[in-house]
Image (cartoon, rainbow, N blue to C red; front, side, top):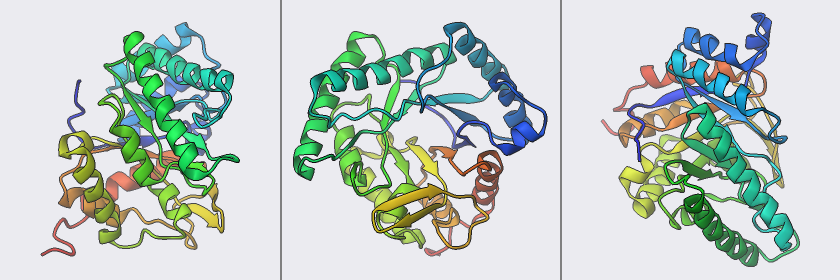
Length: 293
C-alpha cells in the first residue's frame, strides 16, 4: 500500500472561517486550506452520500492540484452490531459506497463508526461487530478496494462499540483496517483520562505492541475538545473551551517521542480549520525531550 510520508493536519469539513471568507463550495476548500498551511481535509458523508460522481471528481481534482490529501467519513448510520441482517447489509453498503466516492476523490482513508451496543450484552455485540467486519473485509477485496484504508473509530459514548482495545482488535482482522483514534472520544468515555504525555504515550505504545510500528506509524487521528457526562460524550467544543479536555500538546510530545506521523483531523465545532492550524503550530513548537530528557 502507498504510505503517507509525513504527519498531516486538516479539518473535518468546512468551518465558520471558510464561509466568512466568502467561500461556498468544497472545491474552494482546497485552496483555502492550502493558503492556511494545512495538509489534508476530511469530507463527511455523515448524513448520507448526497454527491454526484462528477462533483466528487471535481473536488478530488481541486485537492490534487492544491497538494492536499482527502479522506472521507462514512455515514453515521453504520451499525455492525445490529442483529438484523438487512440492516447490516445497509451498513456494508454505506462503507463500500463511501470507498467508491473516495476513489473519485483520489483519497486513501474511509473512517467509520463500528457499532452501537443496543440491547445485547457487550461481549455479544463486540463479537457480532467483529464477525461483520470480517465480511466487510471480503467485500473490500471483492470490490477491488484493498488499496484503501478502512478506519474503525474509537467512540465517545459508553453505549457505543469502540474502545481503544476494541478498535485495535478489529484492526487485527486484516491489513486494510487502520485505527482511527479519536482522542476526544477516549477522553470523554473515560471521564477525562487524557492529561499527561504518559496518558497518551501508554495508549500509543499499546497500539504499537498489538499492531506493530509500521501499521501504527501513519494511523488516523480525530481530535477535539468534547463535553462529557456520566454516559460519555455530549458534544464537540472548540479549543477556546477551558472546562473540558483533552489538550493537544501532550499528544504532540508523545507522537514526536515515538516517531509517529499520523493524519490528524480537527473535529472542533465550527473552528476546525483554525484548530487544525493550531495543532500544527503546537506540534512544530513542542520540545521532544519534555518528560524524558
